[in-house]
Picture 1 (tube, rainbow, N blue to C red):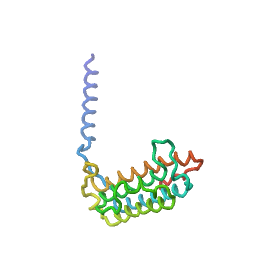
Picture 2: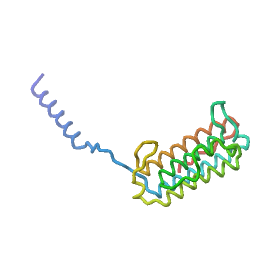
Picture 3: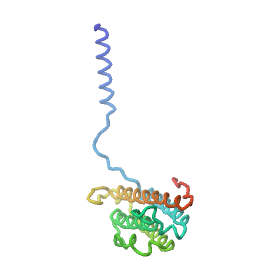
Picture 4: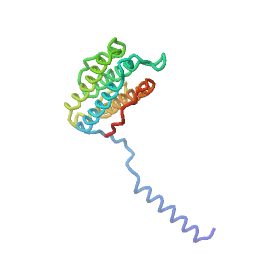
Length: 186
């Protein structure tokens, strides 16, 4: 190898290491959080979107199971509501008015009116809890299913859960010949 090629290669490698060193970020974990007003806006949007799903479903859809091993549409929505209450209570520091398991397996899970009422109340519970929080409280640490996280992250987890189960009900509506509501991303 020529001496000039060796020098150029050495310079290039050195410059690369210097660039990497100066552009590297601190790898310590940063705890991020959304503000209470941002979280409230997302939950209000999710509530409206879920209401659209509940309104789109016919009365008979609430007792429909795509397969014998799956929840009914009503049970899916009641499960969503139970998690809103359960995880939402931990995230907001409020006491859940509903015991886990009380909604999903109840006879109310078969009625469009009862399911809609219960689900909307579960959203109201979370939204009211978030409205009572300030940004400092959003950063407080809580334990959800044995995982430590800040309240904002816990609210993200329950938000993800309700999105997942509402999304599952898209299949129920389609199998019943019902067009699901359009996306409400914003």
